[in-house]
Image (tube, rainbow over all chains, first blue to last red; front, side):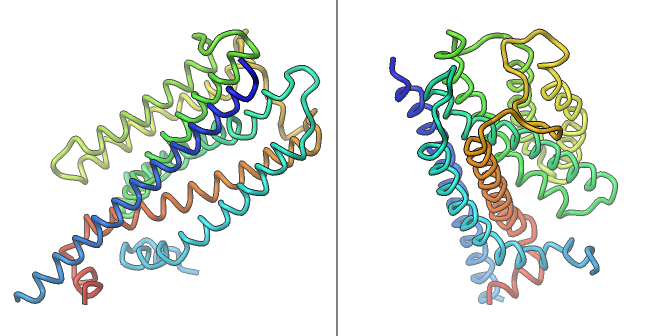
Length: 46
Length: 240
């Protein structure tokens, strides 16, 4: 196997791991926004 | 400056929101510069050829895996000693990023090991202790989320993080204490034997990893703050 295979497998996996973490961070942010919206709805009910 | 001012989740939420994009931007710029220096400017290694270029992702990831664990344990200790909410949340926010860097260090190490040592994996002291670090991160995350009362989860996970600290010197000194397959450090406080372009590329990538980790932890802690504090007056005020 050429050196390119080992380099692509290393850098590719590293960037995939970072992309996955960023996606989870975005999901978490969306969840936080939803919680704030729920509080907003509760506030409106009061 | 009164640092306790920033230990309030309400204050820190806003501070983290203002700082996180800057850390991500710095990480992106440093990564571009680091990758260019490492993959284009740095010369081919006389012994390992082109494959050595895995170093520019492997070494920063390995450094960050240990540094983030240490930082996580420090926040855990602060939460146990001072009983501050934010410290425990910071420890929780760091753990997934630390686990990610540990995984990257192990994975890239395997793809560096195959062409240079002839094997993807060996139960060598450095690799085994790094794998144990990944399990410690996993244990921390699982334990922190295992309790219905998050404060109990915080305390249990902080204790585990502190016990796991003993693994850090084992990882770092394993190549000196035992006869391992893994090579010794190329960079130390005494100096380095590396070519200046190789060293520059590696340090730029390490800085990029550092900036990314701070940005990710700050972003995650904001979610944790909202989840924990959503019934408080300041979150209700934020909702207006």
